[in-house]
Length: 459
Image (cartoon, rainbow, N blue to C red; front, top):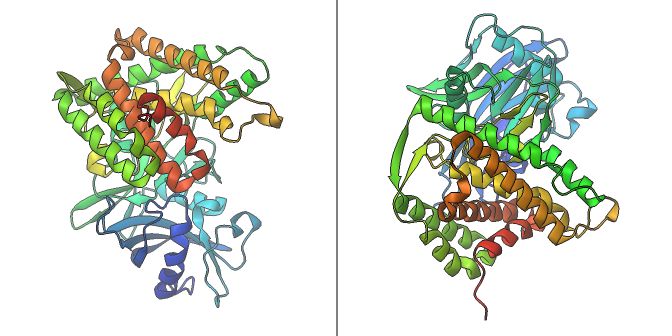
């Protein structure tokens, strides 16, 4: 029992058992949860009206045949108050019978500020350690606020100068987001925000990374938001190529990041047949989850097989690149969130891969930006979005991106047509699984791409 809050660990575990599966960042949606154990519970700090605790939680899953491991570990920052402010009421845990309100601490600016102070002091609480790259690299007393929508991680802002991101699902080992940011800092890369510190824990010699702090980029716009503005303008009668200049510059930024990662962390060669086999297995596994994919499998196997000859260069890449993972500043594009696809294991996310995977991810993101309004058959204020116009926007921005990439590397990604197409199909199948599980009304977006790349056989 933690005397400062009065809530027993047993009751907290019971509340979390129903609360965690409902959170956006829970990675095993649709899989029965059979157990929950709090393995670490420490007090991070307190103010007169609020107390912060940090939990590491092991969740047991009833998934003997699933890709997910039997046990997944998550971190859960909690806030404790005598009454809940309106802004945190929606994030409250079900704990009847207590005179204290317990809620997601990352929704409370006061709790966020306590984490900032812990980072500034390089503090340790139990097995939770706050580290900085250099002394005085983080100031204390920074005011906290929540940033944007929550996904597989939670990001908050401190003092409008730092971005603190917590990795909700925890895996033993060095997190690639921290690892790659440090490598890019060594290279002097201008297309990422500098790393300032991180949070870690160690258990029986196994190091796990819990979060990271880097410079917060003021006056920046998310690439997805900027692209949607272009599509909205297109609906209103604007030019289809208005965003192409930005897409060209984005291609240059991605190519520079790839070049720096290759220089700092090295390259190797892999038989294309190995990559093709892995892509085929992922697409076939996706078809077991999304029945609509099954009719496209024959053509999908044929498309992927075209890329099986020769060797290809692999190195560390972003791993989950799309328009939501880039920021447009007044000067340049920045890449963020190098953690990789959240559904993959840490080992898989750290494995070198072809830079074409990142290119394919961005091409798929252009397709999403242009076509997501077609899900409901209308754009803003009921204005229709024509399929042909949307497709033309995708083609122009995809071409501009590849041309920008080629201006740095000297090689146009489209020249490796077979492998690029295989990666696009791989990504579309991954998206189909995600949409089927989380946003069924959006499933048609990736399925349009799958059917374009691998048309189903006519009956």
